[in-house]
Image: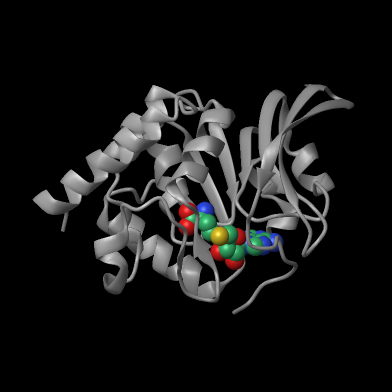
Length: 215
Ligand code: SAH
């Protein structure tokens, strides 16, 4: 349930994020609507509106709100665009992308997380978000190409299949870096059939982009 207290804490978090001047107003407005606590275990409900990452199942984390705001701002989702997210986790980022107007396809490799996120999104009446239990390295070929792709796990290098599944003119935001070393958030734009540009947006920290499924 979204209580008066949750709403107050959420408003305060959004005000703090807004004060940094780094994030789009559209994204902040959406994050002001979505109850982040609904994506966390009840033990974390009191903390859900701090700008912190928290553990979810399978040794993974829900991203920090400022990271969600950063990635979502850079992705520049427009209404009805087809958006692929790699790393459903709790489902929170997928919810943000959906309320921004995207047609969201989200992929997770851990079965328990996939199941739980699907349930959470259903409870919030966001069950038009399509969830898949897949290895994100392969993307989602049957629904490609995508206008936007966002990875919420740090890859060693940009998976080729994801580059191929990006529309010409499309944008991908993905953390990249060797395991255990610093990751950089990259913005990749497909400028033509055979060309992609790459922009380094800055340092970041994500759980690893892994291989294969975990049932
Ligand atoms: N977007 C999530 C953040 C989850 S953390 C949220 O809003 O809560 C990153 C997620 O990426 C983890 O759940 C992890 O299991 C998943 N992941 C890592 N490698 C993956 C892969 N190859 N395919 C699909 N999901 C992957």
